[in-house]
Length: 342
Image 1 (tube, rainbow, N blue to C red):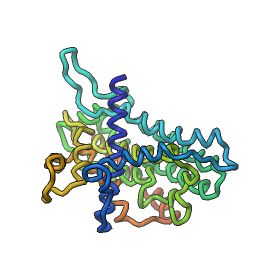
Image 2: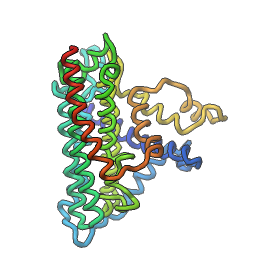
Image 3: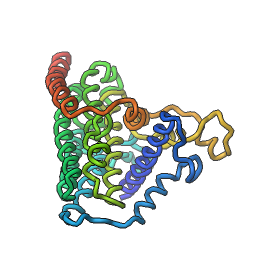
Image 4: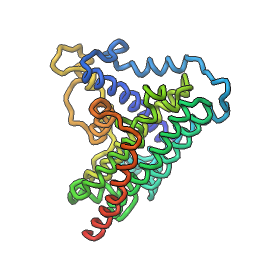
């Protein structure tokens, strides 16, 4: 129970700071001020936004299917939370009572569990679009479901070479397998790139944000949602970003006793909100002190921040057909090469 409370708290704080970091990066790219009014350096802006959504009025469309309308955000939120139950966020903690696994459920099929549970989130998105009885929401739900189902195939097949090299599907064993040799990314560059692109598409981030195209669909499948129901979709999207970013060290970088998710994730996000060269009060000098970013930090910020503005939106035909046709043969070819060389 303690592990669940601690992990859920870290998860929610990490998602909150990630939203703030994305807004800060976006403001920096656009040469404007970001959130800087609530708290030191704007650090309390996510808390203010959350409190605002809690106090908002719940609205329901007149012709909506109310039971499914309420169920949809839950079906999107719960799978996003469950995936972190099997991800070790630190090495086993030695205590006088023995080693304590820093994971809620150390399943021997952790990698497969994450792929299976994360795929359930598409049901919530489809239900959100259909139950709203809104043509824009329905189009957004159909776009999202088609995109997520399509790229799930590529994401799953991109993990096969990693599992073949490790000889196991347990996340701890995959990390330890790289501790005494080369990083997997050096030999599985194609598979890593496919996983990275599929992760962008799975989380509906640019350049794969067609399901939420504001200029066409007025925010897509959650157009009719407000208050905390909208926030649940929002949290689920960012939680899936953190999950995909946390999986990349397992499939591409060495581990040993290092952590895939550590306190540095929150620490480095907070450092984005101040400039080390400017004169700061004592509390902000601590925030801006240097530290090496963790593996999850750089991957999450790369996907969540700069790529949102560096990459343009793709059209439907350019988004799915050519990339799926290119990815599909590359994954088995990479797996066959890995098996032969191993």
